[in-house]
Length: 150
Image 1 (cartoon, one colour):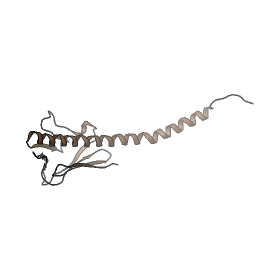
Image 2: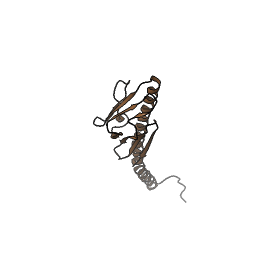
Image 3: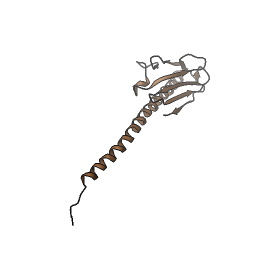
């Protein structure tokens, strides 16, 4: 009878191979989850800026505008030193669509908290995976976001 206890070399190699296979499957999914998380964070930051501008327009009793520049992938918030860009979160997040009622790229918050141009206005952010976040602003000031994650 052999009384040696422990693992054989073959058992150890099999365990390492199984761990490698699990890691090979899990790592790309974690990277995908992180990139989609960056997209969600950029959308929430933009919504936060909209809410800030709306509250500021009401409290200061003045109209305030946010100007979007899709070519340079940024937007300008009055009162902040520099234009903001969703690439602050990740290099692969872009402003791919600014669809305001009547055209243009300027969104104005009125003194009563309403948004001009009136109607349904949307901004679309896209990441390198093809996932999108579509932010919709209604005239009355309601803001919501819809995600399409890849």
